[in-house]
Length: 106
Image (cartoon, rainbow, N blue to C red; front, side, top):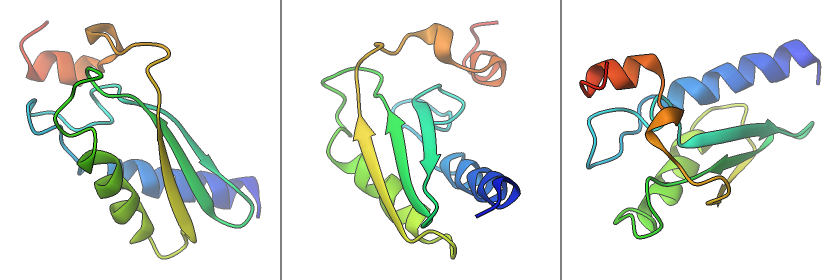
């Protein structure tokens, strides 16, 4: 797969991620800085490395499943796996300027 096609698919995945919100914070998970990496293999398998706002986050069980299901709706995606990490731990500094503005931190 050409790097352009991988990039286009990566952009589609980010668009989907921007439709998923943390239920406790009115900002999408991408702008919150919860997504650390999106990897696309040559077979169009997708692996998303992400974190949660805290290890005891109430959506720790459901949010990764929701992300996998929504990313799998993209026609080109063969499979999607979400891996949770707490290294590094999430902090408010990871939020985009847009998210900080939305939440009144700027």
